[in-house]
Amino acid sequence: MLPSSQHRYDSLPELSEGVLYRRRETTFLILSGIFLGTLAMLNILGITRFITLYEVTDSAGETAEWRGVPLVFAVAIGVLPYPITFLCTDFISELYGRARANRVVWVGFILNLWVMFILWIGGVLPGSDSEVFTSVRTLAFGAVTASMIAYLVAQLIDVHVFHFWKKLTKGKHLWLRNNGSTLVSQLVDTTAVILITHFYADALKPSPDHALWPQLLLFIATGYVFKALVALVDTVPFYLGAPRLAKFLRVPPPDALPSTSGAAAVEAGVG
Image (cartoon, rainbow, N blue to C red; front, side, top):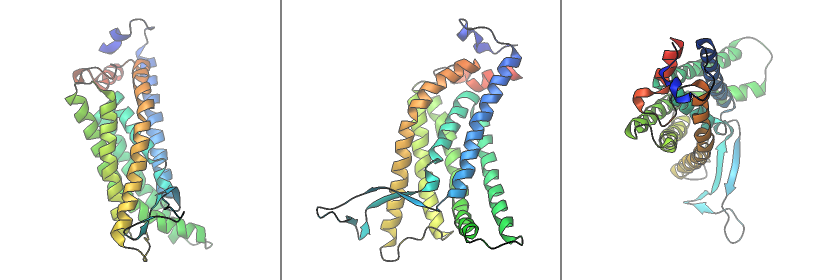
């Protein structure tokens, strides 16, 4: 039997259960594939390089300082693709429900363990020495250890807050749950990654010539502002994409009540 949401799209050609199943599962695979592929890439790249986004200068053209710390705003290269993972989980949460989004998050956690295992076994097996691999392995181990903890907490918070806002607003205000969930989870993630990377993994390597906490706060602020700006920008593809994907998958649109969620329609269509 076709999902009960079919009447919402009476003007469109009626689709068989087989076609609906293929559309829904293919879309899910694409979203989860982008999520997991991005996650693996950023964990390997990690903190192998920092990219300068902005440098504050004084009237003399010299780098300005805050509490003795140069105001150079830089982010680790692994941070660049990270906001895409939150966009993917928001799409999955919207179209497939909280349970599937949480499962993808847990699969991502297992993927982190797999990356660490490959890096570990690649270092212990006999072979030619490689300074590049050793450097990447050392930095990635520190970054992955930190990101595993922060990632799991932040992504689960993202899914939880997303559905909290969806329920609170009765399915309205798509922009609020997209930005509200991501901004909260990104703050948790950024703070946790910086602190764990430094205090537990000892992989951040702040300058010994300057006070520690101003440097850490600058790292946190830079990373969070970057992620927050990207999160605001990704409202556009989410706002435009969610209704179109809902229509393509024949699930209730994003402004539907929680009782008629996209997840319920998906289950009805593939069950």
